[in-house]
Each structure stands twice: as structure tokens, then as C-alpha cells.
Amino acid sequence: MTQTAKNTGHPDNSWYADTVPITAFPTFAGDKTTDIAIIGGGYTGLGAALELARHGVSVTLIEGAQIGSGASGRNGGQIHTGQRVDPQTLAAQLGSDAARALWDMAEAAKAHLFELINTYNIDCDFRHGLIHSWHKPRFAEDDRAYADFVSQNYGYDKLSLMDKHEVAAELGTDVYHGGLFDAGAGHLHPLKFALGMARAAHAAGAALYEHSRVQSYHPTGDGYVLRIGDGHRLKCRKLLICGNGYMQGLDRDIDRHVVPINNFILTTEPLPDRTILPNDYAAADSRFVVNYWRRTADNRLLFGGGENYTPWFPKDIKAFVRRNMLKIYPQLANIKITHAWGGTLAITLSRQPFVRALSPDRLVSAGYSGQGVVLAPYFGKLLAHAALGDARDIDLLSQLRPPPFPGGPWLQTPALIAGLSWYALRDRL
Ligand SMILES: Cc1cc2nc3c(=O)[nH]c(=O)nc-3n(C[C@H](O)[C@H](O)[C@H](O)COP(=O)(O)OP(=O)(O)OC[C@H]3O[C@@H](n4cnc5c(N)ncnc54)[C@H](O)[C@@H]3O)c2cc1C
Image 1: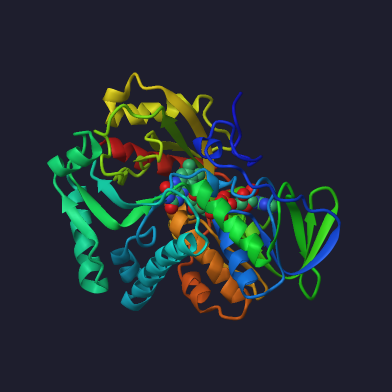
Image 2 (image 1 turned 90 degrees about the vertical axis):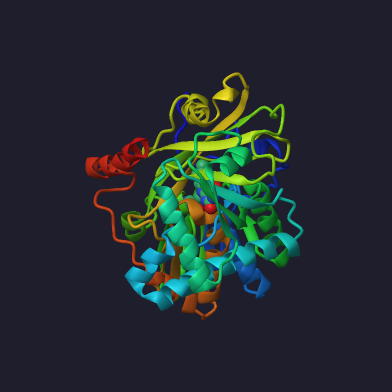
């Protein structure tokens, strides 16, 4: 049966959900009041809930499916450096001060992620190191310019260029022309991390509910009332909207700026040897529709690649992703694929996140493209700070102003699908 992109809970065939005990939270019922309400139990919502609870604020998080079952519990687990848009482009668009502030913010987000792991003892298989491999020789120039720029302007010295042979030795494939190693990046088990955040937020005093979809919300004059599930209500003074790729229909302004796309992952049975990723680094290539992979703690290859732009997943996700994996690792033709699943993330037209105060007491953060593992927990924290009265960072992020998409939710306009497909086609040229 074809799966839809709707989040109904952890996917059946997810290696993540198979390798961590799922913490259950209650369903919301009745008529309650809270100071700050949060819609969405992924990294963004959990980051906000934890920070608010740490400040002793009354906070209630409402999740429509299971906590951590959205993109936060399904993703590639890759920890990237910087914003999704490169710093040279940001400097040209916004000026060097704003670009520097955005770089510092992304580094602060990384430090925040490590702090969460350490402070709350979140056992999430964290490993350092990520290789960005070039599928065309021309990407060498881009990465050299990037490495020089961040070294000279920001003092970031964790990047080193790799030649074709070094990349082949690390990745266990000779299809790439070289690459860039980032010692400050890495990877983790995303669902273990999400559930660790949830337990920390709960222990700090946040009320967390799941299987409780927010159907709508309405202003009351001194806040909002959320209509939840089958006739339940939550009143709040401030509202943080953190539904990312799963919240279409909740707010028209957000829907115009943030659209969902689907991405897919498989895991193999444990690999027979360590020729692929012998040093446990993560890898991602230079394709627009990026391939990304890493070794799991139990020695499987976890490989992500391929996306679609419809409310339905491909019928056979294993075959859909395996095709891409075999182009890089033909030697895995006979390896068994044990798990394959899809997830929905959110993008914006400019690939810059959509973060802003929609009104003084209603904030949103969404649309991280493929950078949410690091950015989303931290941007959740920044939403919390704005709700507590310090909106400096949110004001900076608001300057990014991703433009609205023409058309409705999902990439329904043929021009946009054609646009993204054209980039995908360019990958092959
Ligand atoms: C397959 C895949 C691979 C990815 N790989 C990477 C990667 O390697 N590195 C990286 O940095 N990023 C990656 N990403 C992106 C990253 O996972 C996301 O950016 C990040 O998880 C976003 O977190 P979030 O909390 O904003 O959204 P989510 O984790 O999606 O959480 C949003 C939650 O809101 C809930 N919700 C929505 N609407 C409502 C409502 N009305 N009522 C109640 N609840 C609601 C949803 O059910 C969902 O649980 C990937 C994403 C996918 C799908």
C-alpha cells in the first residue's frame, strides 16, 4: 500500500524506531490553560519547551502524532556546519556583519546540541567528522572558496580538502573526484536525541502531550485558544508554532512560505567489513538532491537519497533509495536491505529558514531544509527567548525573508516541480 506523507506516528519500517524504546506521553483531554503553548513535538518544539521549562514558565507542548515521530525521528542524523545557504552568498545578500552573525548563530547551535547531549546524558551514538564528496570536479573550486572564506573571516579551521584517493579510502568507493572533510561536523541517532530532549523537557516541568492534533487556533484578545483533537481546548497567552513539514492548513501565511518535501532512507544488514567508512565519518555528496550516508552503531549502512514533492511516498521505498545507493556502492548489490522509510521536511523558496513573529505573541520557526538537526533545537530555544522578551536573534533571522511560493501547499505548480527537477537533472550532467 502507498504510504502518505501524513505523520501518524513512527514509521513501521524505521531502523530508528526499532532501536530505541519509545517514551509514551499522555493524550490531551479537557479544557486547560497554560502560559505558553507549543504546536509540534520535534526538535524545534522540544527545544522551546525545554528552555521555557528551565526558566520555570508554564509551558504545554501538543503533538499530533508521537513525540519525535516527525522529521526529527526519521532523518539522516547528519550534523552540518553553518546555515543552509553558504556564507559568501549571505554576505553578498545581507552584508558581512549579518552573515557573520548567522555563522556565529549556527556555531552556537552546534555547541547547544553538544551541551544538550552532555547535560542530559543523551546516549545518541554521536560521532565526529563528515566528508562532503564531489560528484563533479567543478565542486572542488566551490569548496576551496568556502574553506578559505570561513577560515579567513570566521577563524573556522576544521575543514580540510581531500583528494580523490583520500576520499576513496574513507568512503570505500571511487566514484567521487575529491571532497572536503569537516572535523566540526558529525552524526547521531536522531530519534534517540529527540526522545532525550523530550525526557529532559518533561523532567524540567514542561507538559507534553501526543496523539493530540491541533485542528485550529483562534485569538481571544489576551492570547489564543487551541482546538485539539475531538473538541478539547487549550488556552494560552503566547503560541509557538513548530510543526515544520507537517502543519499545512494551520496558518495561511506559513503555508505560503514553507512547503513540505519528502526524503527517503534505507538501512542494510550489518556490513561484512569496514571498507566503507572505516573511521565512522558521515558522508554527503554535492548533488542538489543529495545522497547522504553513515555507518550505524551496529555497523549497518544508513543511506538516504531521493526525494519527491507529493503527499504520497513512492510505492517501493527500498527500491527507490537502493537505486541511488548502488550507483555509489555497486559492491552492495547482494546486501540485504532491512529497513526503509520516508519523512517530510520543510523547505522555503530561498532555502533560508522561515523564522518570525507573526504577531507579538505568536512565533514560528520552520523550513530548515537539510540543516535541522543542528539548527532546529537551537531555533526552538531562540523562540523561547523571544517569548520571554528577548527577540534579538529572532529579529536577525527575520531578516532572511524567504519569499512566498506561488501556488498552494506541496509543490503543486508545474513550474516549481520543473524547477526542482531541473536541478536534479543538472546532477546528472
Ligand atoms: C528523511 C529526512 C532526512 C533528513 N536528514 C537530515 C540530516 O541528515 N541532517 C539535518 O540537519 N536535517 C535533516 N533533515 C531535516 C530535519 O530532520 C528537520 O529539519 C528537523 O527535524 C525539523 O524539526 P522540527 O521539530 O521543526 O520538525 P518535525 O520533527 O517534523 O516536528 C514537527 C512536529 O509537529 C507535529 N505537528 C504538525 N502539525 C501539528 C498540529 N496541527 N498539531 C499537533 N502537532 C503537529 C508533527 O506531527 C511533527 O511531529 C532530514 C529530514 C528528513 C525527513
